Each structure stands twice: as structure tokens, then as C-alpha cells.
Length: 273
Image 1 (spheres, rainbow, N blue to C red):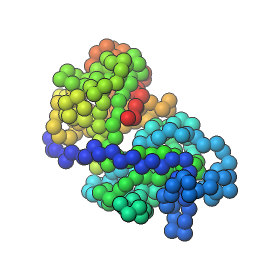
Image 2: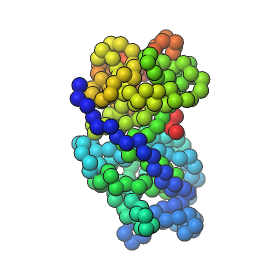
Image 3: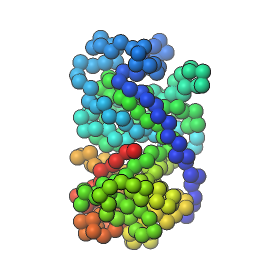
């Protein structure tokens, strides 16, 4: 299996709160909230209420691989924002305080995870993402190539735990064994790196055996398509066998990619840290 260079897990807080985005003659630029007057007459603000004050995690990737990226992934979009217009700006803020727009993109919000196509930008220059949903500024965090998550199974309400044994939804609390780096791969699929042992989650035996965090590199067995479900939960479809990951036996048995459908046992809540 081919390896993939490990993406740094450095998290950069964008702190783009409220209406921290302004219109200028060159497009969207970042400004502090104290510099802006928020009113219904603002060019980007709508008459409707703000759909969320929650922080949305953002990360980037390239549709065709490489260091010039052309996508921004939003993780944790609330149900209330579904159907509203998204406007975003990928930016860089230098030590001097000067902010430069690197890329822009637009799209439509959906519950859960949303991918927005942008103009090309250099992945190593990004400081953060300024985000408008329905015309309102939304706080964000930026993590290059991924973000830290936990997974709560709909099968039993427990959090998925990793370690030397196969993954299983067995914990009522979140600690290190329940934390994962969500890695965005060049093809848009995702991989999970367990904080318990810093290993990648694998659909062992081409998906014929339980999921286990035991790989040092990402190949086909370590790649999953992340599926957004109508209720805001997510599911994982293994690229090893195109089957959906299931919390087997109502969560009492380890996770395994062996289902051709998505029902309660195949659904997980995505918890962002």
C-alpha cells in the first residue's frame, strides 16, 4: 500500500466572529468586529436571522492533489443553515497585521459537511477562512488538511474508541482514545488517525475484518468517503470494499465495513474539538 505524507495537525484559530467580514473595492477582506457596523443595510447582511453562532471547522485540499488547493471543507454546519448561501474567503495575515485574500468561493450550505470549490491557493500560506452563511459572519477554525474529531454512534449513543483492539463504540466520555485526526486526502476521501496510538484506521483485510488503528501510512484500506445524512449525522463508506461502516450488534461489537445501506447502526454524530 502506498504511503502518504503526514499532514501537520497544527490548528490555527481564525477567530472570525459575528460580522468580522467587510466589503471593499477589492472584494471580501477580514476586519475586526470593532471596525464594522452591523445592520440590515450592510451589503452582505440579510433580513433573516443568523442561522448559527457556533464555530465551524474549516480545512482545505486539492481535487487533483498537490500543494495548490482548490477546495475548502466546512465541518459541522448546523441544520438551521441548510439551503443558505455560503460566501468564503481564504486569507493570510502576516505578522505586520496585513491581510491578503488568497482565494474565494461560493456555494450552498447543507447540514454536516460541505465542500466549496474555490480559486486556487497555496496551502502553506493560509491563516484562516472568513465565512458568511446567509449573509452573516460565522466563526471558524482552520486546520491544514484535517481537524480533530470524535464519533458518537447512533447505535448506542457511545463514543468510538481506538487502541490496540478494533474500534468499538464503547465509551460514555471523550478522552484521548476517542479522538481522531480527520485527514482530507487528495482525492477528497478522508482518513482517521487515532490519538490513542497515532496510527491510521484501517478496514482490515480489504474490509473483511473489523476497523483497527494499526497503519503508519494511508492506502486504499485507510480511505473512506464521508457521507452526509439528512438528519445531520455522517456515515463512512470504505474504499476498500465500497461498504458502509457499521457499529455491529447495536454497538456491542467492533466497527466493520460490511453494510450496503445506511440505517441507525451506520450513523455517527461528528464531534469537533
